[in-house]
Image (cartoon, rainbow, N blue to C red; front, side):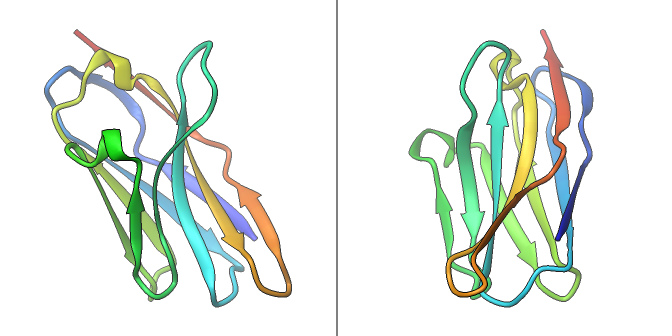
Length: 116
């Protein structure tokens, strides 16, 4: 399994941004998720989508973060609106399967820097 996150960069506060995670080699029943890790902080969950399309969000991120999965292309998009400086972080995607064969894979991350 390989995960490639893209779309990061330097953006101005208030602007929107879309990140894309492209997965290859995943099996059915794999949940794809977005996490982020800000400087000096722990990695935190943002949102996930199961292979069946069920979404889950961290409560504090429901207002500005929208996740969408495209099974035909094995991609997971993360749309962020009204970016804030505190959104500055490395954004990671994760692929997890809880039935045999069980696996968890992480992508390399994409850096988002929000300037005020």
